[in-house]
Length: 146
Image (cartoon, rainbow, N blue to C red; front, top):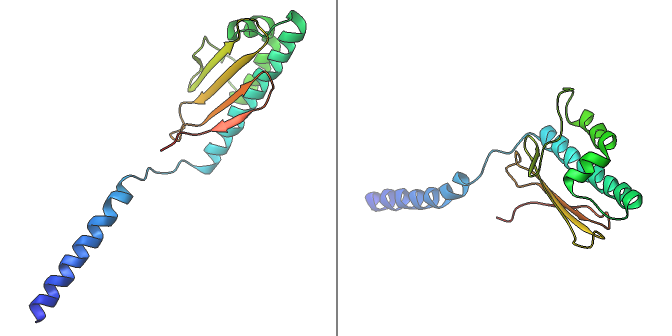
């Protein structure tokens, strides 16, 4: 009887531990909260900067502009945001899609120039942080579905 109880207990422990292992194996280490907050603030801040630059582009030129156009027409305004991103004076915006290291941008201007859709992704965030916006200026945060 004692042997059966020991065998049953061993089997039960093996089944319980075997069932719990896959759950723990899929959990990724969580990034530091301070880093997440800083990246989120930068993501939303840059999206606000883009929306504001698009408003200036629309009022000055009568239509919204592409990323390259914004960099040309709104240079001082766009570069003003870079001081929040990095203290390095050599940092500058690049061509889409990777406008800064770890930041991908997709900016599509409608054919008539009266609207735009923008997606900004933080590629360093393992949760897939991104922000979306359009000509209405409303910013939406999103993450990957798992």
